Amino acid sequence: MVVLPKEPNAPVQVREPAVVSASTPQLAYDYTYGFLLPASDTERMAKHHQAMCEGAGVAQCQVLNASTNANPEAGSVRVEVNLRATPQWLKKFENSLKGDLKSYKARITQQTVTSEDLSLEIIDSEARLKNKMALRDRLQAIIRQSPGKIAELIEAETQLSQVQADIDSLSSSLAVMRKRVATSHLTLTYDSHVQSAAPSAFAPLTEALGQVVYTLMASLGFLVICVAAALPFAVVLCPLGWWGFTLWRKRKLARTPAHEK
Image 1 (cartoon, rainbow, N blue to C red):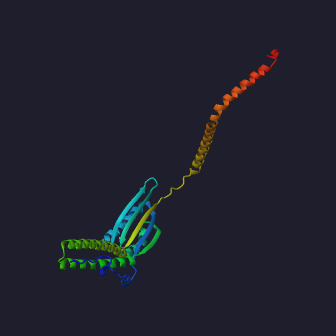
Image 2: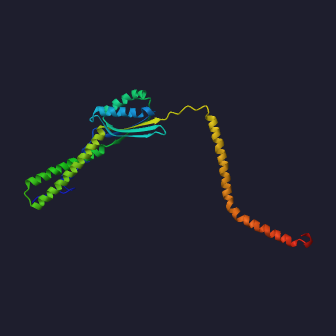
Image 3: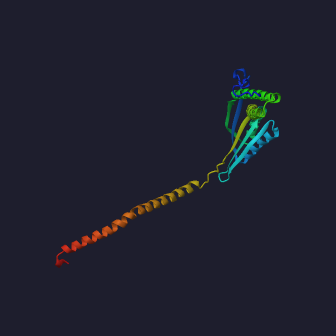
């Protein structure tokens, strides 16, 4: 008979997290840089940094995505580039920033660094992966060495397939976390500042005329509103007033002596 180890009671599934330790913290870093520069240089500086990343090769730096938003009417441009790079490339990038700021007439408006400690997640995933691999080896040995019934062998192979799927999933998760630790994520944002035009000599006169026109139109608008508000009352009160005046006149004529008529 084939004896199948059952999770989580099987000895190979019991893990002792305290036994596994990390020598150094496993930190994943995220860097954010914001730049402000003339509109004509915004895309040029972004493409320069993107070319630096691509030129270093995928082993050193990768461009994850890049986007450009332009507003021709306002004369503004915004470019965002997301990278993932090694500490060596990041150091090279930071050392070149001073020259880039001077070349593209830019200045840094934002610079932040955040980190996430993945030590416990990595230790936990490594321990689970180790136990899963031990269980897989044990199941493979059982299938090879135990000439059990077909139903029992099918059950063992089904469990082996599930364990292998868990191993693949844990391996992928570990690979992602280790890559986050080995490399850093960079968000580079480039914003253009709009050059304001020199004020015209006729600006005060133009502004004054504009205020005059605005005042006239506002007064005319107020009169229109007053007429519109009084119109419903006029429709009702005018006939009543006319009827009252007519009635008063008739009574006056009735009280007047005949020789005065």
